[in-house]
Length: 508
Image (cartoon, rainbow, N blue to C red; front, side, top):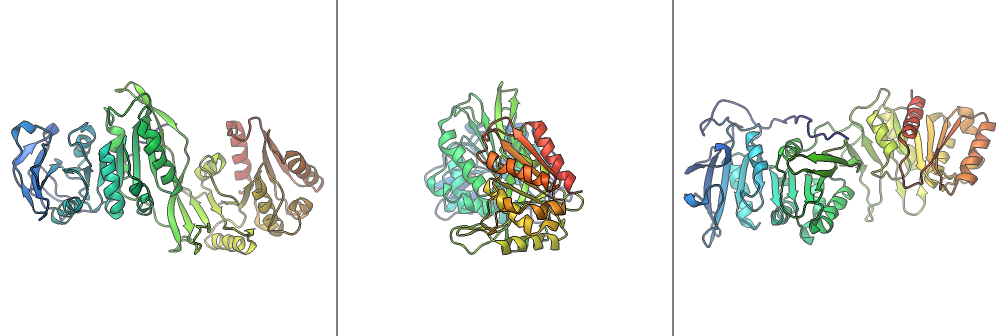
C-alpha cells in the first residue's frame, strides 16, 4: 500500500496573515502574535533562537544570555531555575503553530528543523512537567499568541514527559509524536482523555527496543479501543537508538496533517447524543527508509484511510453500545448503507471496501440480557431513512448475528436490498420462529442472499446448504462463496471483489 504522507496538508487558518511584524523577515501569524525579545542567537540553518530563564517559584520568565560553549545545545540551569528556549521560523505559518520538545534538546533535531522550515516555532523547557510547564505554555500562548494546541515531540524519557503533561492537559495539545517512548501507568490510564479531545498519536519505535512490547504496542492497542487515531512506525532491526528518522519528512508531514482535529462537518443524523471517534484498518505497509537502509513497518491513519465514527451515548454504567455509524469520505449516490448487526473489527475488509465505495456502516444497539431488540433496530432504520439514506439497506452479520439479520429482514422484506452472511447460522433471539423455517417472505420480495463460508465453518452443512436448497426451491437468488483458507485468513482478492460487486449491484 502506498504511504499517504504525500497528501498535502490543508491549513485551517486560525490567524490573520499580514505584512512583516516584529522579528525581521518573520511574517505576522495573527493579530495576537507578539515577537520574542531578548538576546538573539542562531540555531540550525540560521533560525533565530531566544533563551530565557524561569524562576521555579515565582514563575517569572526573563531573557537569558546563552553561554557560547553551548553552541546549539542547552546546559543545566542553576538551582531554582528552568532553562527555556524558543526558535522562530523565518515565516510563521497560519495560526502560529509550534512544537514542544519534551526532553533532550538538540538530540536528533532534524524534525524540529524541518518544522521550522514549514513555519512552526519550536519551544523547550527543562524537565520535568509541573507548574513550570503550565506557566511556559501560558506564556507562549497568552503573551506571545502561539497556537493554543501545539504539537508535542518526545524521545524516550521525553515520551514520558509529553504523555504526563498532555494527559493532564488534553485540551491543550493537537498531536503527539513519541519516539521509543515510555509511559507511566497513571498517564496510560488517562489516554481516554486524549482520545476524547481528538489528539492524534504517532509512535516511532525500533523493533529491537524492549519499550516496543511494554509501552508502544499497549498504547496502540488501548488507543484503538478508545477510538483514537494512532499511527505506528516500527523500524526493523533498530534498538532504542538512534531516535527519529534521518529524513524527517514523514514525521513532519504527519505532524502537519494531524495538527488540528480532522476536518469535516458533523453529519446531520449525529446530534449531541453521538460521540465522535475513528475507524481504520490495521493493514500495514513497509516503508523503505533509504538513509537507515531498513524498512519501517507502518500502520494507522498515517498510512490507511481513516473514517469518522459516531456512537450514540447510553446511560449504561457498563458501556453497553448504542447505535454506531461509520461515515465514508463521500457518500455514494442514493446514500446506500450496511445494517451490520454485529460489532465491526479492524480486519473487516468487506466493510472497508464498501466504505471506500461510499457506503455508510450502521450497527444497531445490542442489549446485555436479550440480544437484538426489534424496537431499537426499527428506530435505527427510521433515523437513517429520515435523513435521506436508502430505504433498502444491506443486511450483514457473522455467525448467529446473521440469524438476527435474517429475522429482521423477514419481518421487513420490502426494506432490504440483500443479505450478506459470513459463516451464517439462522438462529434468532429476536424472533420466535426460526428464520430457517420462514424464508418465503424474502424470496417473494426478491431479496438476494450471499453466504461466504470458510472451510472450517461449523454451520455450513446444517445452515448454508439447507438455506441454499430451500431458497432456490422458493425461486430466490442465492450465491455461496467458499473461502479456501480458514476463518483466520482473509478472503482472496478476487472473492472480496465478488462480494463487494454483489452488494453494490443490489443497491443500484
